[in-house]
Image 1: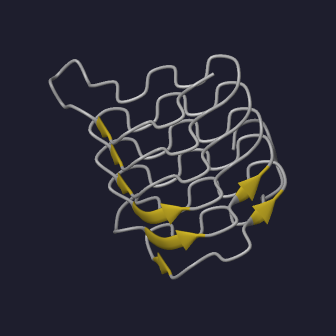
Image 2: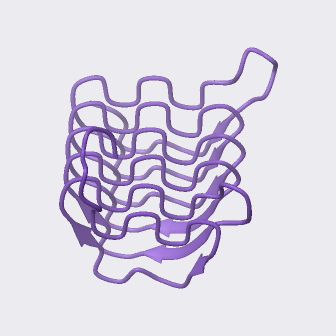
Image 3: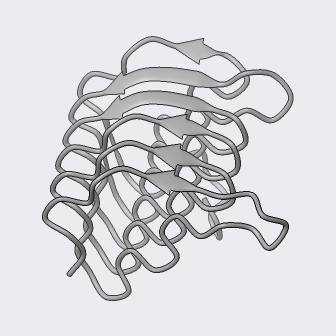
Length: 150
């Protein structure tokens, strides 16, 4: 995550590799940043059950063709879920969703696919740029955003 020197919990889990499930989640600045991220291979993470808490939680998770099956209780903290599931990645449902200022900003941007965002995103500027397509025509897809962005 931006601006920090130490390695956050669950940082890059499944980066160019495969991780089954992350059961109780991770806590601290930048937790779950870059999980399921694919830089040169195929990054993948199964379910992230109780999810991640802290500023920049789930930052760029699943980005660049990565795969995340589901994020259940979701990510909480300022800028949580920012850039999640963008650039040709596939992320299943985000169940209880993301909370904190800028939550879900640029979600599924530039060709990413994210399933339903059920509890949705809460905080100032939440959902800014969700499913924003690329100028070159590469679309983005997000399923239902149930309880919406507040």
